[in-house]
Image 1 (cartoon, rainbow, N blue to C red):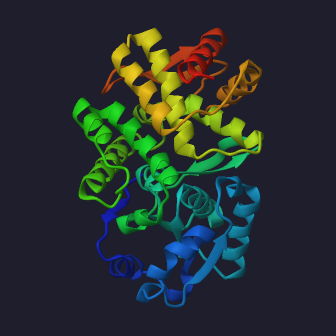
Image 2: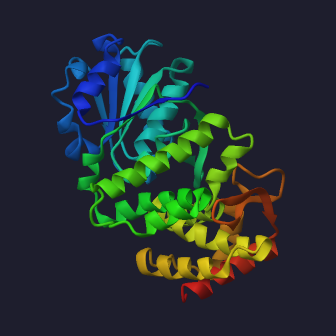
Length: 353
């Protein structure tokens, strides 16, 4: 799998025109959701490359990243005459790039797609690296495929339309990249002004996170080894996210990752002697910025069950990426049920549940 083009755009219509020049006008399709249609699509309506394109808008929200929405995209492409020479432009957050990427991967056994992420989260995470998928049977990203987009176009003025919660959601993935990278980048992240995601410092950090993820995924496109590092915080995080959907109170992905990082840094402390001062400072940071997802011991079985479905697992063993220090990660670390319940006890105690 060759790497996608990563384009940090200052003139989105022009860059999109260049990317679409090799496609017939009637073979260009655009997928967006209700939020991005309202806030972002108007900036593209005057693009020459989209004259004659067909548009489909689906409801916003991760609860719509499902089989029904996927079927709607397939039907749209089929009815509108898409062929293997078509391209699907996915304009939106992570739900749109995940769903649209999977639709492109599976329609006629694979058509081209271009991602235009409109949120911090999709820019630094979902849109990069070729993972696509939908939620299924109450589980996050249970069905999917690897399918690299032709290009990912980053247009950071979109971030100005985000509320603080969605900025924090993407920021959690950047924190993960900082923990995997080095102390300097970690400290830069902690110093960012989250009130101004369009600032040069914030945009520099976004670009650094994109580069970190792209470097790892290019070296290991199908998660045979190195790419597992990017799952730091996600084994526990996806369990929180799955539980929130089961309870009908879905949380933003990045918030679940922030809480998952807290849990997995605790395991890192227990198993790899991760520095206690860094763990304590992170606890304080999460409490202040992300609050708490309330759980009790009655939720432990459901959380444990969700972790058993994590795609990194081999057999019945639950697998984690853990840290001995910032930038010092260890793959294929395991924890048994008792250790996981102790981890969840720590989470509750640390956040005062």
